[in-house]
Length: 157
Image 1 (cartoon, rainbow, N blue to C red):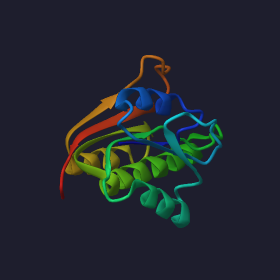
Image 2 (image 1 turned 90 degrees about the vertical axis):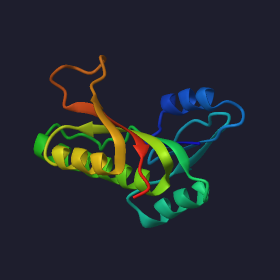
Image 3 (image 1 turned 60 degrees about the vertical axis):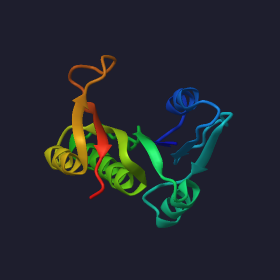
């Protein structure tokens, strides 16, 4: 089971759907609408709202997810002092959800904008997962603070 946060327009969900095959499950969520993708369940809403988070947890059920993908990003203002904390909050939310929703041994790929709070987020991920890497996509500009935190081997505690 794959949980895709910040899923719109749906590229990661399409990729995950192909990877899990007919027997797998993909649950996607975003504040934006997303065109229906065959085999992908979609929950629209803001995960910062308790009712939306509860709906997502209900849709997950007790089985948990094997993989969490988070491409969540705030609407950027172009002001680093405003954008970085907003992005960090979403990355922290994704990491918290990974802790709650992933099966033991599960993995998470979370978009992060480097800045204030980055080292603390990295330290928290290292306490919760066996392996943590920071990846910079080749398509990302060198000066862009956008990176991805790849955490695998979710620990029980």
